[in-house]
Length: 290
Image (cartoon, rainbow, N blue to C red; front, top):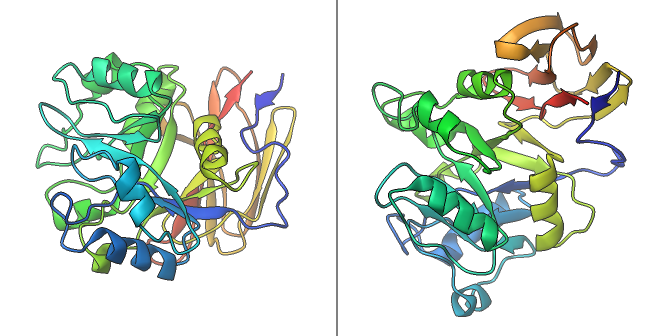
C-alpha cells in the first residue's frame, strides 16, 4: 500500500514561495489602496499574492497598472453577494455571484480558476459555512483552515475541525491559510507556502490545485519524504509535530523537529501539524491512501 504524496519531487534545498490569496483594498471595503497592499505583501517577503476584493474581479487594465514588486500577482476576487463567501483564484474571467453557490463553483472551474470556501467558523455560532453546506458543495479546491482576521471578529480563526470532518467523509480538499487583510497592519499573519514547478502564475495555480503547498502562520517545512505508507516530516522551527488521521485522531507526535508516522489500518489519510512557539505553525496537506 502506498500514499499519494502531494510533495513528490520537490527540491527541498530551495525555499517555497510564500503567498496570501485573501486580501482587500479600497476597491471594496479595504482601508489601503491596491498598490499599498501589494507593497506591504512584498515587504513581508511574499513571492505571490492576490487581491480578492468583494465581487470585484481584477480586470486586465487594473492588473497591468499595478507594480507587483517582483511578486507573482494572481487575478481573483471574493464572491460574497447572495450567500457564503468564497474565493475565485485565477481564471480567464470573473464569475458572477449566484445564491446557488454550486453554480459559482462550477463557473470558477469553467473559467480555469480554483474555488476556496472562506472562514467557515466565522460568526458567533461559527457557521458561516455549515458542515452540511460544505458537504453539499462539490468540485472546490479546499477551505480556509486559518483565517487570521477572525481573531478580531466573532468566531474562530482555526477550522481544522471542519477540514477533518470533510476528509473523514472522503472529500479530497486542501487546507488554505489566509490573512483576509483589510489594511496593511493585517498583512503577514497567515499564508501558503507553495512549491511550484514554474515560477509564474500558471505554476502557482497548478501547485495549489495539486496540493503542493503547506498552510503556515510562521513556520516552513524542512523536507517531506514518503516511503510506502510512512511519511517523515522535518520542520526546523517546530517544538512539536503531530500526525493526524481520520476525524482528527492523533496517531503520533513528538516534541522535536522530525516525525516519522505510518498510516493506520483502515485510515484514509494522514496529515501533519508542526507547531512552534506562540501560534506559529505549518500544516501539511493530506497524504491519501492510494
